[in-house]
Amino acid sequence: MKVTQRFCPALLLAGLLLAPVQGLSAQPGGQQPQAARASGTTFLPPVLPGQAKGTVARAMDGDTLRLADGRMVRLACIDAPDLVSSYSRDVIEKNRRDFRELNLRTEARPQSQGREKTSRFGQFYSVRSRKALAEAAAKKRVVLHAGTLKRDRQKRIIADAVLEHGRSLSAHLVMNGLAYVVFDRDFPPEYQEVLLKLQRRAMRARRGFWDRILGMEAAKRTYTGDRETKLFYASSDVRGLKVKPRMRVYFGNLLDAFNAGFAPARSTDFWPPSASGGK
Image (cartoon, rainbow, N blue to C red; front, side, top):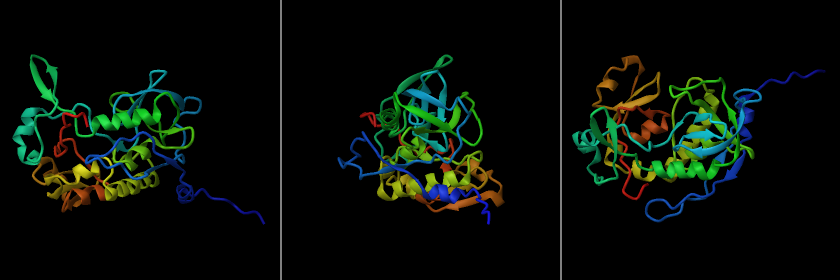
């Protein structure tokens, strides 16, 4: 009797490969991170046959790679702290209640905007995230995996970059508290659920930036989420108030929002600026 085999994503998810994390520095407080492991998620198909492989030239930031052939890759379904934040000193001062436990004398980089200059701040852990990505991927061969060939506004390919031994770079960053999960409807729910499970483990262990972020005063406040985009806003944010009532979800604190797989909207400015140590 002939048996017909059916494709089952669950079986592929059950066979995650484990690889040790290398080169991570001590977390705040002097404690070394526990032996974290990143999962291979190679069940996503290659981006384009014959063009899916490349060599990483450098890490541009904590979630963007430049390949040796010039292609730019934005790692799928994650977001790392920004090296240059979109929030100026004036915005931070106006929202000082969100940063009252922080030292505002942080490193600032002047940015020219026409005739005006605005001091901008990198976000907390942005330098560490980029360093960790560089240590994991620089000069190494990767295969780009994605459900569809998609580029963002900066013309970067959106894909998971997988090392030759099977380690997913998106998973590597999330598992170690170097990036958080962002919903993308163009990627399979099974793939994003794997990343979310890794994020929950990282939060429980307070790995990477989670120890600081979940200990902030802002972490105790309430947030409003949008079920359609899976973005959340501060409860006082007018953008959150514009979310359709049937799409609106409320979170009692920051941990609840991240646990549910929601990511902060760009207007949600609770993330602290980088400290003078470049963290």
